[in-house]
Image 1 (tube, rainbow, N blue to C red):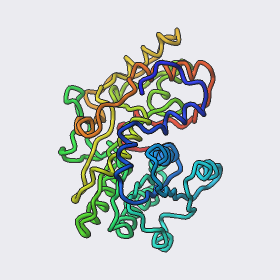
Image 2: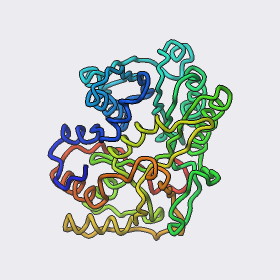
Image 3: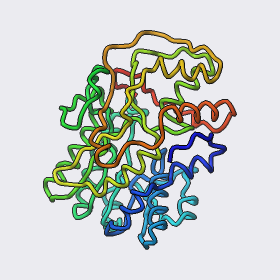
Length: 344
C-alpha cells in the first residue's frame, strides 16, 4: 500500500488505517465464525474492527463483527454501528457482564491500562491481569488473539537486533509486570482448556495523530529538548500492524503463539529528530545522552508469517511532517517512550 502522497484529512487517515490488504481479505474468506473485539475503543480498536468489517465485505462473506467497551464519553460507538459493527456496552471487569457476552468463535482482546498505572497500580493489575483470566475462561472454546506489549522484555543493546519471542521476559516496573501477568493468565487458560491463542507483543504502532514519531516531531517543531536516554526504538505503521493482528487468528495455538509485531529497523531518536528537523527547517534540541540499551523487539517471525510492513519509515516521516506543519488533529497523548524506570 506504499503511497508517498500526503494524507489530506482525518477521514482519509482513518480509511488507510482500516484498509485490509489482499492477505487479510483472503484470510477472512476462510475464517470460520464471527468476531468479537473486547475493548474496542481506544487508539487501535476502532480501526482494527473496521478493517475486519471491510475485509469481510470485500471477501463477499456475511460475518458478524461485534465491539465491546464501556463506550464512555465520545467513544465512537455511533460510528462503529454506522459501519456495520454491532456494539455491546459494559464493564469487562465485571464477571457477570463477561458471562453474558455471546460466545463468538474469534476473539481479539485489546483492553489494557498503561498511563496512570503508577498512581493506580491496583486497577492496572485488575485490567491487565485479572480481566484476561475472566476472558480466557469465558472464551475457552474460541480462538483468542490478545494484545500484549514489547515492554515485557528487558532492555537490550541496539546491535542485538531486538528481543525475540524465545527470550526470557524481564519486565521493568509494575505496568510491564502486569502485562506479563496478562500473558500468564491467558497462558493458564490456554493450557487448562487447550484454547488456541496468539499473544501480540506490539511496540510501537504509530499513525499521524499519536505515537513515538509524533512525539519527536512535535518537540522538534516546538523546540522542546528531546531526551536521548532511551536512544533507540522500533515502530510500525498502525495499518500494517492491524493487518498482521487480524491474520494472527490463523496462527493461534496452545500453548499460546507469541508474535512480536513491529518494524525491523532499529531507529535512533537523534537521527529521527534530525530528519524531522530537515523536513521542517528546524534544529532539534537534545538533552542527555543515549544509553547502551533500549526496549527493542525483533519481528522476524511476524515477517515470515505476514510479510514485511507496506509503509516505510521514510514515508511515515513525510506524512507526519506534512500533517503537523498543516496544523491537523493531534491527540496530545504522549507515549512516554523515553521512560526507562517503567513508571507511566
